[in-house]
Length: 541
Image (tube, rainbow, N blue to C red):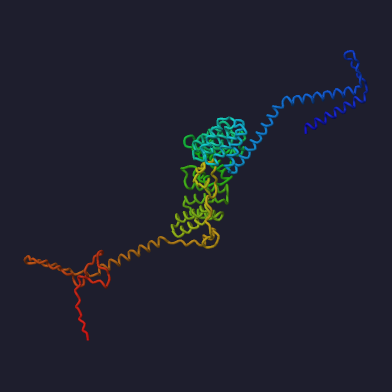
């Protein structure tokens, strides 16, 4: 397009020049070696331009003839290169499709048509073909050769990283990712793997530094970088909480500035401030976090801010949280638990029932069971509330990759992913309809709640019954006649040679029978000790 425009401009210029000369006629005289040459100006200009064009054409022809051998060689070389790139393209497509035979064939053809040092993709095609065919040792050798070339170093490191991950060599994979991240922190896979490995090793400072490099290279967006930085700062603050409360406080408050809705950071910051006896500032942080998103761990930390507080003081703190977020299930459960600790069963029961009305969840019914056990001790009513808790939806928990944790963790213990834990329902409600065929609600549970049993009266009646039974047994034993004594056999007057006859038992006393080794209870089997029955003689008529 540019050439066409330039050509049009030149034609216009020439046309304008000839028009200008035609409007101004004149003669041109030239004396050369005593001869006078005279012509019109327009003819002279045309001849000069034609001469210039003729010289240019002659020069082009001479140049073409002079460079023709090189041009022919370059043509065949370009044709060969084009065939090689066509084979390389076909081989890469075949490798992506899993056609190992065609990929291997195209790799050999492209290596014969293109020099491998000029095109590094040939080594990649051969490595991919080896991976498809299951020759992993050859593939690793290809990737190691790529690492030696600065142009293909990143490609070779990624191939070695994937192979190490496939073999389960975590340490080798970490080293490859570290090496790639040092040379090219803008690589997402290397930076992410290195970030997770440093976090797993507890190298929070190195992980934060690498995250800043990623942010500067614009590998990740600013909101995502701020979130990950808040997670890393909270993890570092958790480790510093015992030995360095001031450092934990600084890291946690910085994390809150980056992610204001991050509950673990608020909890760690408040605990660090509690250790420094800064109760007001810690309470302010927890109240702001509770106002944004009520969380049971925030409520428990706020209520038990001081270990020396009485149960009444804790109840006042819980009621303050309820005033901040009224008609919320977490607020009602916190107040109900604090009221139970103070033995105020009426308030505890009312708040727990209100929480179950807001959201019929497992925690509300379990709390009602605890209240029932502390107040009445009625096992029937306790089992009733436990059955309701079993049918109710489960409580939220920290979940990451199917793993449920009782506390927040910066990394997933399953995959090692950073910031994987989410506060959500770990398990769904039990499938199938409810036993009575109605929807689960606190009103239905209260209607089916069994009445309170008088345990003291039942216990007294049971004790009285036991006393009466013991008295009747003692009277029966006293009224039973004593057994007659059996006379002992007299010793013989003088020794005899025969064996003494054993003393027979009284006729009313049965003969003792052994438990094992006795005769079977079969009427057809005769007792050898029994007396023989008289034989009956049959008379034939």
